[in-house]
Length: 303
Image 1 (cartoon, one colour):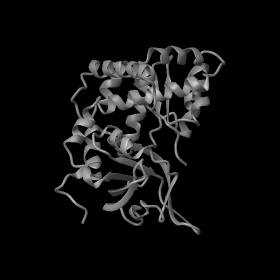
Image 2 (tube, rainbow, N blue to C red; image 1 turned 45 degrees about the vertical axis):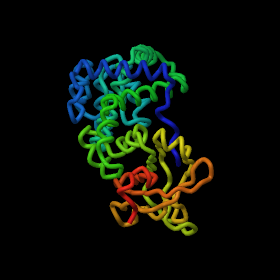
Image 3 (cartoon, rainbow, N blue to C red; image 1 turned 180 degrees about the horizontal axis):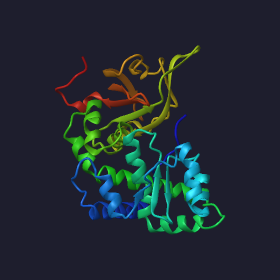
Image 4 (cartoon, rainbow, N blue to C red; image 1 turned 90 degrees about the horizontal axis):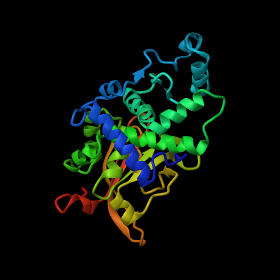
């Protein structure tokens, strides 16, 4: 099932988030340091990561017993819903250490985003100290802002975009750049498509499953496109990729990677364009990169 948009915010929100993110990078002297030094950023923010994971069922009882009733209530209400928790009262975050390390990096910065945004910190503390619950619309807005904070800090503003511009337009570039920033392939793929100066799209798919009617099938988790791709082709709306789909030929069935393969994509005016599609199986998701052949220049043509 396609995930709902988790990062769109209006320009005013974006300015506030980016200002907070810049301050966080400035305090930690983190600009130009790779991988992005998350530990230094948290330390400079006077924010601690809980030394033991509160998400480990064996430790929940101990944590609840040791903490004050207020903190215990906060943890208990959130433990089954999220992978990270920000305790505004104690300036401490809890991260599920059972998820991949690169995912933990983003989670830490997401929770740091709540800490660094003054409005978040004040309101979180208020609601933790009473029996009320944060309005769902406000909570959703806060999550989007925290995601944008994490994204800006992790990729150091436009640094990822600028590095990507110096690499070939291909999926191997994502795999090469991601570790340099300490980012997951998932997050890096999204950033690659969203910020690339050329026309390209990234489909993030769930692992391939098989059904009697369509055979191989991969549900679409997210689709990110560059501004130029959106201008030419619009925003793709597929919810699943099957063997009958134009991208079906790049589903990596029994393989880790599918090299650049010719596909056809229809633009907003109904005209078909020759494109290339590549795929990489991260085990957790399948990353498919699509781009018009003309974006490669006259020297490169599909074999």
